[in-house]
Image (cartoon, rainbow, N blue to C red; front, side, top):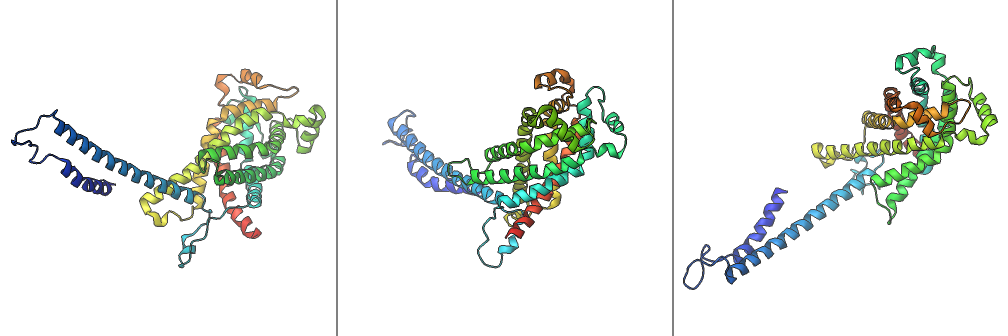
Length: 378
């Protein structure tokens, strides 16, 4: 940048010198000093100003071109496939175009990765659910942990949670990636960025909510001891409230998950962008296309999940109260009054830790599984 500015100043110097008064600031027929307000001095000042404005405009134009080139480079890098290797294009031929994963590859990877992550972390989720459902009766982690009475208590609801998580993950990730690609490629869309990610993830989550809400309803009622099996919970809910009863807590779940998913995916994509910029700055452009390691994916995904989980804990507490209320339908307003201001972050620690682990497992598995699914489909 310094060299560029100096070059611009060098180009402007001859014009400035031509417009400057001869004789080192003296002029006139008698060689005397010029009046600062004389017509000749004002004319020369105006000419100098015009020369400077011309070169400043040129400098701004060049800066704008560089900014557009950097933005285009970032957009190109962000759509590169996860397993891109620079060596694949170093044989002298043209580099391969960025690969887009198909809907089926994303859906298949999401349908395997989500139940894997949720099943692995189910015991911690059970403790978090007990804390939020009991609120002031079991206000801390230790009491909720001890109330479960051994490993059988930790495993309550794990089977329906895993079974229902598979279609949930398939629908969410398939819709998310397809919507993001459509918005990014549309000539009328905002292009790649925060808006495309936010809109796409909300659409994907809403599409999967018709599977997610029954899954969480059945699982959480088993975790709090209301039912002993998923089939018993399913039949009882349908018998008492009809099919609509399976969607109990749908509104509170959407209010919780919309901001959670936006925070999760925005932070995950932003961490990727920061990694690209740091690599470019410290290792040069030759390393910026190197593939992301599983360790980096675990870290970025886990931190993203922990942040999103912590900030959306109040919504999760409200949703848990609505879903686990027995014998009647609890509204959001009633849940808020029952929780109180000091109960909104009940279970925030276990929830954040749970989402750190779930997202670390999920995103690492998803990124690798969709490569395998795309390769098998090809």
